[in-house]
Length: 351
Image 1 (cartoon, helix red, strand yellow):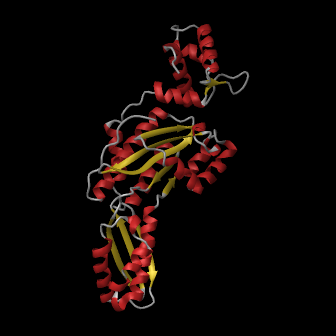
Image 2 (tube, helix red, strand yellow; image 1 turned 45 degrees about the vertical axis):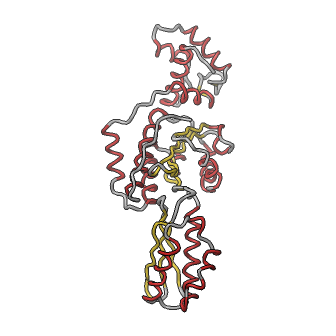
Image 3 (cartoon, helix red, strand yellow; image 1 turned 120 degrees about the horizontal axis):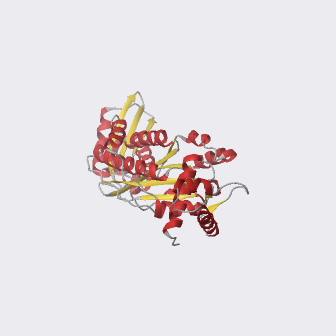
């Protein structure tokens, strides 16, 4: 859809005025905004044309106009003027993330909390997903008596742990056997390949400790299966209750987000560095009054997960997109440092 320069100016003004005030924008307000450069009659005619194109709509007969979902889409794709974050803003984000624990999942949780705070939206992120991810480290931690803790770390930063109570007490010989088998069989193994079939093949190598070792290795295979799954992390969901645009539908939206699987399907489509999904562009009616801004982080050039926000369609896209972009880039870098690799930048652009 091509618009004349004047219609673009009027549409941009309607979107930005509505984002700022939350009130429908009338021709008089636009006339004051443009001063004497455009007459009120011309503005009314152009608004009527924009309405016919489906870019703006009138919520009430006597009210001004508000952007439609299509109007927001056109604004984001063609009219929005995003400015890169200043040095002070970037430094503030970096300082807020500097106290991370070194746990990749906690880095994502911390980033989500920060993003929810600065945007007043809900923040969503996913753990790194990589079909080629391999097991980088496995630890067996005796917890006393017959209890152990297994910790598994993958090459893409996923950390999973699980307690396990054994049928017999833990001995130094058992621990030594475990690490010998781990080093020989599991380190460097693709996570997807660690399953019960592989465990059964190891039985002849387990010797006198076979029953206990099988119990431990089965727990390890369950950890590997869990690590291969993408996990969705949500922060700041209650922020959505404060946006009047959702009204009584806010609780329906919160219930939808809590289900996990639909969001996983939606986020998996975010293959580009940055994607803005507006309202009815999603197949889920619970999101028809929402917008998502999600960016994909990479770790040493490899596909990672996503980080972004969910809010009403009336959000300040030009202000929030740079925050999402920079924080996602920062997450990729921090994950790279934790994993002993260099994170890669996220390029500009929207989808």
